[in-house]
Image 1 (cartoon, one colour):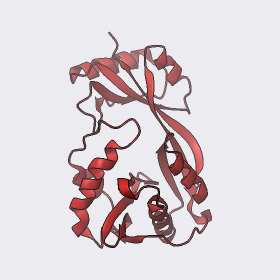
Image 2 (tube, helix red, strand yellow; image 1 turned 90 degrees about the vertical axis):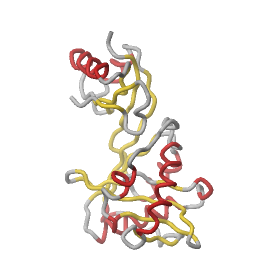
Image 3 (cartoon, helix red, strand yellow; image 1 turned 30 degrees about the vertical axis):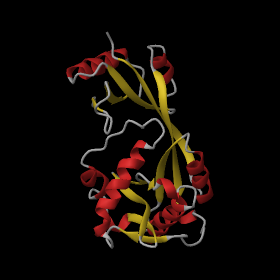
Image 4 (cartoon, helix red, strand yellow; image 1 turned 180 degrees about the vertical axis):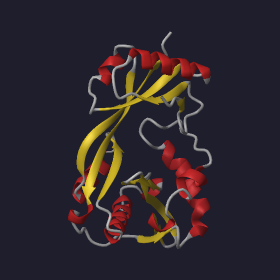
Length: 229
């Protein structure tokens, strides 16, 4: 069982852990591991594939804080929604934009629902250079950074990584332009499917996914509560 501080929220009094089954012994073991790293509570991830887990935790005083829709796209069958409305380059083409991307990331991570307290550390290492530069897309307008999005491979599954759009550019179709670039690249690379995760409060992103042909698979649920006494 992997019990660790919450990435980006290490300053909070919770340790992160996954539960895929109701298991009081595992909960107590996770609580003990959390206390060993000076945390007094747990942030537990589970999914709707094991629907009994969330009610079990709620009975122990846990509250749901976030929920994500996991969707999948059949790349070959994805509709052609036209060319991006903004200039799209890759990080392979514009490595000089690294500092601007880092600045945007610091703002965008904290803008996520339920993540306002995020403090990202070592972002270039895990949020930029850990991913293929030719699959890391950047939206520009007159040379100004509007947003970025990338694709990542975990095991044999390709998925959309974090997407960031500058606050002043939101609602202008930047996310759609970046997603068009991702799907086009995936088709060129002959990737069979793409997955994505979106917080349920991001209704515009969920609607955009539907336009591209993404189909919901299940939901991930995040709950917080006290460690076992």
